[in-house]
Amino acid sequence: MNDPKGSFKASISWMQGSALTIGAVLGSGVLILPVATAQLAGPAAMVSWVLMGLLSIPLAITLGRLASEQPDAGGIAAYARRAFGDKAGAVTGTLFLGTVPIGGPICALIGANYISALFSLNSYQVVIVAAAMLIMAVIFNYRGIQLSGRVQIAVIGSVAAVLLAAVFSALPYVEEKAFFPFAPNGIAPIGVSMAMLFWAFVGWEMIVHLAEEFEDPIRDIPLSLMISIIIINIMYLSVVFVTIGTGAYIGPDNSIALAGMIGRGWGHWAGAVTGILGFLTCYGTIHTYVAGFSRLVYAQSRQGDFPEYFSSLHEEFHTPHRVLLVLLPVFMVVLWISFWFNINIGILIQFPGTIFISLYIIGMAAAVKLLPSQGWGRYFAALSLIMCMIIYCFTGWIGLYPFALGAFGWFVQSLRKRSLRASEL
Image 1 (cartoon, rainbow, N blue to C red):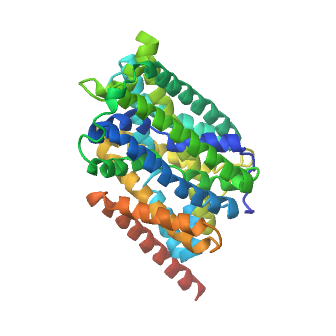
Image 2 (image 1 turned 180 degrees about the vertical axis):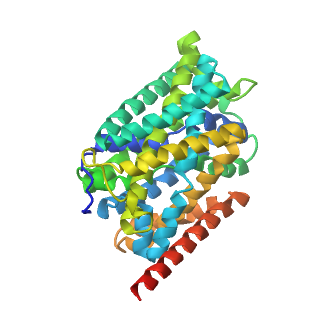
C-alpha cells in the first residue's frame, strides 16, 4: 500500500520471517509450561501439547492466507475494518493498545529474572536489565526491519541450539516407566492444560503486521508460517517429552527442571546456560512484538483512527520511528509501576493474554467473511473461531477487560465521527 508520507521497504525474506514468527510465539512458556502441565495432567500432558499444536495450524494458516492475499500493516484491525466496517477496525486497533505496552515490560522482567539468577542481581538491577532489553528491541526495530530480522535469526538460532542441547543431554535418562500411569489424574486435566497452553501458541498474528515488508508476500508468508509451525512444535514436544520421561517435573526442584536437564550434560554450566536461554527467549518475543505493534499503530494512524503524528515513516530506515520513540517511555512507565507496586506478574500477564484471544476471535470472524468460499480457507477460519471462543470461556473475570477497552475505542470513534460531521456542516 503506497503512502504519501513514506512506504515500507520490502526486505523481509522467508528466513527472517520464520525467525520473527518463532520469536513471537516461542516465549518463556517453553521454560515453565512443560513442568506446569505435567504436574497437572501427568504424562497425558503430551496429549495437550499435541492437540494445541494441531489446533494452532488452522489458525496460523488462516492468518497467513489473509496476510499473503491482502498484505496490510494494520493486520487484524485492517481485516476487521474490511469485514465489519470502520468502527470495528478502530475498536480492534484500540484493543492492541492493551497488549504490547503491558506485555513487553512483563516479558522483559521475566527475562531479566533469568539473568538475575545467573549473576545474583538485586531487584533494582533486574529492572535495569529489563529496561535494557526493551531499549535494545526499540533500537533494532528503529534501524530497520532488515537489521531486526538478522538479529532475530541469531537469537532464535541460539535458543534452538540451547534447547536441543538440553533435550539431548536428558535423552539418556528417559525411562519408559515414567510414562505410566499415563493419565494419573484422569482425562479432565488434559482440557485444563490446553487452556493454559494457549499462551504458548500466541504470536502468529504479529507476522500479519509485517506483511507489507515481505519481498514476496504470496510466497514468503505461508512459507515462514509453515516453517515456524514445524520448528515450534518440534521444540515444544521435545522438551515436554524429556521433562516427563526423566521425571524432572516431580520433586522440590521442579521449578528449575530445565536447568537440571541441561546440567546432566553441561555440569556446573547449567545455571549459566539456562539464564541465557531464558533471556534470549524473552527478548525474541519482545523483539517481534515491538515490530508488529509499531506497524499496527502506524497503519491505524494512516486510516485516521490514531493521531496523524504516527502516520509517517523514517526517511532512511522506512520504519514507524515516531511510534517507537513514544513506545519506549510507555515501556519505562509500565516497568516502573510494576516494580514500585510489586504487581504479581502472573496476574498482570493475563490481561494482554485475554486481549490476544479476543483479537484472534475478531480475526477469525473477519476471515470467515473475507476469504473465498472455495477451498478450505473458511473452514480453517471457522474451526479456529470456535476454538478461540471456547478457550475465552476459561478467562474468568479478566475476560471483561477486552470489552471495557473495546467500549472505550467505540466511544472515541463515535466522538471522532461526530466531530467530522460537524466540521462538514
